[in-house]
Image 1 (cartoon, rainbow, N blue to C red):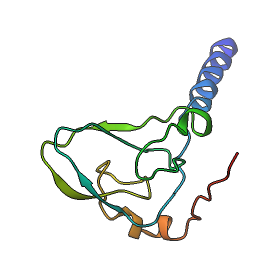
Image 2: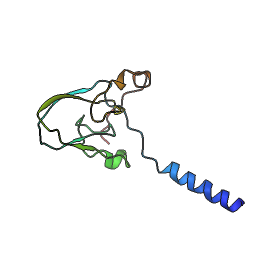
Image 3: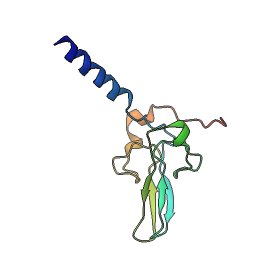
Length: 113
């Protein structure tokens, strides 16, 4: 019985340690973007990209386990893409940046390293 419990605890620890990292907050406001219908975009989900709101590949070294959200709009449109990376309607802003946990959180500062 103890061996089974020990095994289960190891399994839980492995699962917890392999969760993807939380995104950093590059902006507390959305990005107004002109999208072209039929064009593929990669929205940054990690917050580390220097090309916000789009991915520049920074997740490969700074947020392994997070990946960009790829999407293709059906038609040309002006939209607001999420800057805080906590929207419930990715990649679009849903107003989450107005909630206390975002308002009180620090902004991510880019470094050259």
